[in-house]
Image 1 (cartoon, helix red, strand yellow):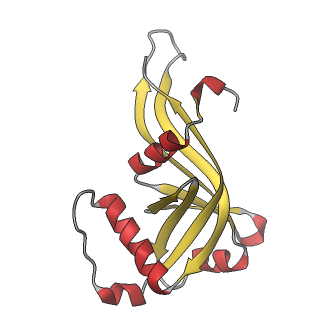
Image 2: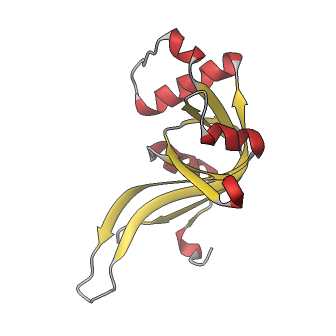
Length: 158
């Protein structure tokens, strides 16, 4: 990391940034060996130092085809954006917090599929008991990214 003073090294702080984010960009190995990046809603599971991200989609489409073809993936999420203007031209900056990493992604089913949907709902309905129709489970694909590498970075206003 070029600016080591911006690196977030504490695992719990990195998880805190992830909890504050509302979109995760998932990068897959796309057609013709080109990157394929898609912004997604997500759910977060933390067990000790293990992190898993859950996503959902329709039961078919390019994203699922790519996951089935190659389980390697990368992700990025960011939040707390704020322009930091400067009176001196071209010297402004931007406040942010971000997390990125890599891992393996796979489709899940059964109880884990329901758990993944529950985690996604919990991420966006804080403090609420969010409900969804059981029929949704049958017509929704759920996939889990097991995070292997993770880094965090922030630039905060002075």
